[in-house]
Image (cartoon, rainbow, N blue to C red):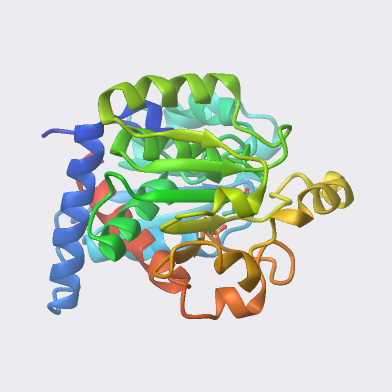
Length: 310
Ligand code: CP
Ligand code: NVA
């Protein structure tokens, strides 16, 4: 399967088979990594630029390390320190950057800025999180679920809290494409957009996955294999902080809620976590939690993605 030259802006652009292929390559690369093969120089001499409009720990470090382990180089840039911050257009920036680097990963507020960047770049553009999507996170999370549960098809994933955010929207598409049964448990106003839901509904026709919206968190987690949450206040939503905390507080993942899931359920969080808000310490530090493996897998998945796209 040839994915060379493709952008990775959202999961709607990728078929079930293509996503499965990336997960297969991820498994191979992870196995080789643990067998001691740190450097697999398939991208020798190539450069990835990382551009950030928002802060990052995992995305920044995992992409930098991934690229270096593939024999490549990285340049990490802050959006506002580029001429972009003084008004140079995204199109001109894309045209120029494409002459220097072999791929661009960008973390932005507006997803449209990423689409614009990709439109004028002649090199692949990877979404490292936008207000609408976090596709590398969701792809990597599918790898973690596969690793922990041994399958994707038929697994029940319950996402609690802000069901309309970038991570939830990406998990919805990833699940729908790959056959994971996903339940979103949130107040009605915190749900995925109509457009995203339409894409997911189209995908389940092919995968056979089930999509549910259940407002009551206890009812939602009944029989869950995976309990997933994310912050209630995403980057850029700081002004809505008080309202969001008030409206989402009943979706906190605590021990009481975990007891209603399957006995062997795992707890996932894309991180960073706001401990004491969407998740309590005893859950994120407890026996259910796979969050550190989940964070590590970002690096392995992104190695596969970079190796295939660049
Ligand atoms: N999960 C994730 O993308 O983390 P960072 O914001 O630290 O990159
Ligand atoms: N929804 C969160 C994810 C952080 C990785 C945010 O956008 O802030």
